[in-house]
Structure formats: structure tokens, C-alpha cells
Length: 226
Length: 226
DNA sequence: TCTTGGAAGGCACTGAGTGCCAGTCACTGT
DNA sequence: ACAGTGACTGGCACTCAGTGCCTTCCAAGA
Image 1 (cartoon, protein in one colour):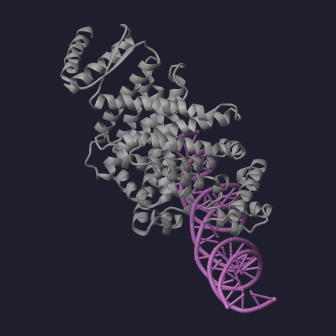
Image 2 (image 1 turned 180 degrees about the vertical axis):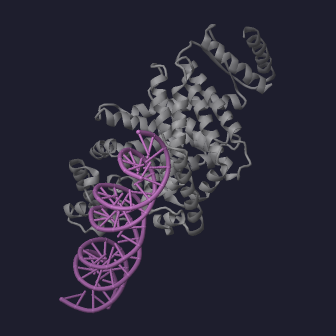
Image 3 (image 1 turned 30 degrees about the horizontal axis):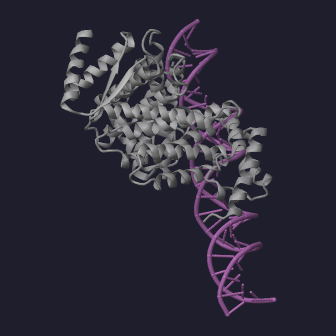
């Protein structure tokens, strides 16, 4: 039940903090200074943010909640991978709803190792969420590492799309990029499930090295099936 | 040119630190206490370790160097994915060469959030390494996110294999698990390259006796071709 | 034995993060 | 209008991680 008023001051503090960090350098700005510049007491800064580095990620817990809600409201009959993909798209859109924040943050994380670390941690929280969701929902006959692998894969593509956008200064279309990546993932998954369950996949190919590689795989798969 | 003697004291400090952390709890043990218990000055602890949490990961920079060397000595004609897989296996083996350390560390990371965060960061360093290697070596016509995705995927499987081993108290065979996972990855990659390059005709068939007859024929044919 | 360079000790300092208590402000029912 | 209640804020003091600087020690070589 965090009120609008509180969220506003939180973002206000974050903004002045980032401005200071960009101007003076992260290490050279004390929390004290941030507090003064925001007309708040030092103690209150630590009420809104757990640590100094969190000042740069005011939006993350919110977004984590968003993703969680997305996953929860996915009915038991929807494909779990699709659910995760949908949640990831939602997350990306949420990122893009604050373009200034994301772009300024990038200028900081690129230079300050401590903040880059923090960013990695934030992503890990998100990955952990989708991972446990997949572990619960994926068919039990799937390979044990599939949930882990999928979660990592999807997050990596999410990060790449967002990263390209941010590195390009906002010129690319990250949503389209994400969609393309997710398509790629879906195809990968279809193939692996094809090989592991009943319906069969056949290919008519020219005689090239690639074909021979495929053929070898196919032969092995056929051996397994028969 | 770190001498053997220095490394020995480093591991000695780390061991006493972990023992203390396990007994008293991470937050309740000051670096001062670690220093005293190791017969070293507080200042010297910070000469061997950059921070308190690094006390639990004395082996990581070493291993990072190991992986880097593995990747560097991969000739330009070896398949980059194979090179990364080999380096990952090497890394896993290196982990397993200190089973006590890994198992005790797990007891800590499971309970202390700060240490789990640190572990995530360590993995990220490793992922960054393989990611940039793949970016350099992968064919330029591959999808842009492929290096990112592959690096994440391989690391996730690495973590899963090691995690299962550690959670099972050392009863599983993580090397075999990793190999199985890497096989899976290799198959995924073969498929995706098939779809992106070679021309082909696809058929989706039900699992019937006829299909199986076709499959048998195909298998035999493949055997003849190879 | 003397010297010299690298490692360790010791000390003082900054600054992040926390616990505690008192003040303040908004919101409620009367 | 007013007292009360509860949540937020300010201010203070404290702990402890991490760093800079100087001194001391030790080991290897001339």
C-alpha cells in the first residue's frame, strides 16, 4: 500500500542522486550529499533505499512485482514458455516507459563497476522468478536443466535487446528484437520437444557439410526412438 | 607472479573465515575477528581479499584465469562453441578439485544473501568472458543475440550441474550432467543453423507404424551416406 | 654484515548502514 | 474544532568495512 506521495519523493531522490553521480562521480558523492540536495535527511534516504547503489534502480522492485503478477495470472492451460515470454515483453515495455531513467542509468553502469554489479543482481532476481515458475509448470519429463536454461536464455535475450537500444541511444526497436529472439527460442524448443516426444520431423537436404551434421543427429535420434 | 607462500596464507585465512562464518553467522563475524583467528592483521586481510565477502571465494580469480587460458589456446580452426564447452568442463573440474571448499561455501551462500549475490557476480564475470569470446569467433551471419544467449545458456547448465552436485552432498556426477547438457545445446545449435542456412523441406508426421518404417529406412540411408 | 625491496603491522580516517527516540504531519471519529 | 492515533521524518550515536599512509620486519643477495 505504498502511497503515490511516497513513490514521488522516492523518484525525486533518485533523480537528484543520479544527476549528482553523473556530475561528480559515484564515489565522490556521499549519501549525505544526496540527502541535502533532495531536502531530505540522510536517514530518510535509507528509508526509501536499502543501499546507496539502489538509488540508481528505483524502479526495480516495482517491475519485479509486475513480472510476478504477469506470471501468476497465466492460467494453468497456457504454455509456460509463452507465459514467460509474455511477462518478459511486459517487463521490457515497462523499462521503455521510463526512457530517460534507463538511458541515464546506462551512462552510470557503464563507468561504475559497483553499479554494474548491482544491475546483474537485479537481473538475477528476475531470472530466479521465471526459473522457479518454469520449474513448477514445465512437464516433468523435460530435461532437469531445461527450466534453468530457458530462464537464462530468455533473460539474456531481454538484456541484449535492451542493451542494444540503450547503446544505440534509443534508435533501435527493442520490442521487435525481443520478439525475434523469442521466436528463435520457441523454434529451438519445438525442435527439442519434437525429438523427445511422438511426432516426427523429417528433412530433405542437399549433400553439404551442414546436411551431414544434421543427418548424424537425425540418425542418432532415430536410433533413440526405435 | 604470486608466490606459493602467499597463496597458502590466503587459503588459510579463507578457511578460518568460513569456519567462523558457519559457527557464528556471517554478519556476526567482523573482519577484525577473522584477522585475529588467522594470526594476521586486519590490514593484511584486506591485502589478500578486496572485501569481506571475497573471503568465501578465494579460488575465483584463479579459475577465471584458467578459463581465459583455455579459451585463448583454442586454435582459430576449432569450433568456438566447442571451445567454450571445453573451457566450461575445465572450470567444472577445477571446482571439483576442492570439494570441501565448494560444499562449505554452499552452506553459507544458501543462508547469507550477501554471499549469494557475490556468487552471482562471480558467475557473471565468467559469462562475460565467454560472451566476448563468442562474439569474436561466431560467424557474423549468426543472429546478433546468439553469443549472449549461448554464453548464458552454457553457464546456466554449468551452474545447474554444480548446484545439483552440491545440493546432493556430492552424490551426483556433475561432469556427466554437464556433458549431457552440452550435448543438448549442441543439438539446439545444429537445428537453428539448419533453419537459418540450408534449404530444406519439412514434414510433421504422427507416430504410426508407417512413420516408423520410413524412419528406419532413413536411418539406414543416413548410415550409408556417412 | 649491510642493504634493499616487498610484505606485514599499525593507525587514523571516511563513509555506509542501523537502532533508537523524539518530533511532526495527516487523517479519523467525536 | 479537537484530541488521538499511526505512519513518516529528523537527528543522533554507533558499528564496522574499506583505504591511505607510514613504519617495521624479513628475506635474499652483494
